Amino acid sequence: MPLTFALDPAMTPALRDGVLDLWTDVSNAGGSVGFVPPVTREEIRPELVKHLAAMTEGRTRLLVGHDDDGQVAATAFVTFNTHRLMKHWVWLYTVMVHPRHQGKGYGRDLLAAAADAVRGLEGIEAIRLTCRGGHGLEHFYGSCGYKEVGRVPGAIRVAPDDDRDDIVMLLPLG
Image (cartoon, rainbow, N blue to C red; front, side, top):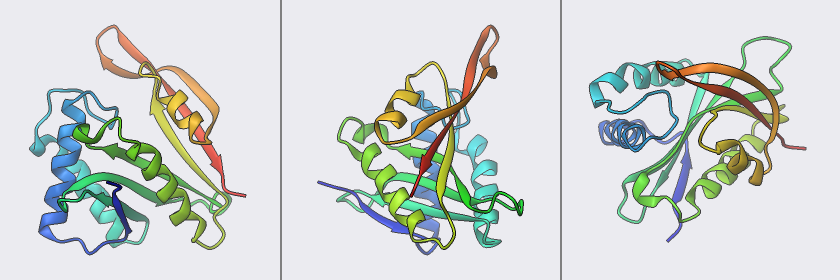
């Protein structure tokens, strides 16, 4: 069954906890979402609070996908640029699909829902994101229409002697 997506859902305690659980589960499954396993909810909570604060300030919007059971199954945060010369594109951060839903096409669905949501924002012409090298994520994003536009070798240190490339991807919306 497909996910049900919502942009800017009401931030309830259940949604907040669902996003926190998702982020923890994705991280502990090896997902490239800012942490290295093992990680706890309490280690992730400060990063979620930063996203929530940016949402309150209108700098970030949340796209959430719920599964048939109403559980948070996918998220992406759309963040606006504040620099006056870069307001025509947005960042996509913390793109996650729960590990129990991997292989169902929900990642593609999430990216398509994000593109549709962003197309509805006045003056936005592209989506930009970064991904961690070493997992082939750039190939997945490429298959969804994103183009690799930059790469910083070894910019992400996940462990001693384990540096990964920081890969910049762009999806033009025109």
